[in-house]
Image (tube, helix red, strand yellow):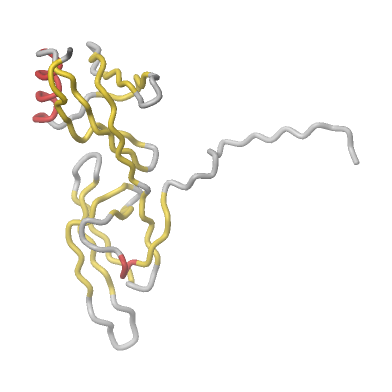
Length: 160
């Protein structure tokens, strides 16, 4: 055996996959799917009949969960599709900085300062107005495939 130490350059994460495989025929409306490398929510599924020598095909129409773009894909129903792991987490809003970043309080008492305000105009004004009025706000953060974005807002009453 050699006495040398081996150093590995690894750029991989802890092995938790960003997606999992699921048969195309099992993906339903309101489920999630990865189309063109983007996590999407399925809004329409149509399944064609098998051809003379072919497979039934699933036609997915889906909307990107982060930028709301409409994407489409056609996959044989027996093939596997990537489905993103989508997590929703609630955080209490502490502060909004001038450069558009929010400061959030996590469950264990730490702060999370790496999220921008949402681009959705109505949600943005609700957050800014509620914060200006001094209300206690809880934001819901959706995360999938290494991206995070504020997607909802709850008002839990005035600050005491």
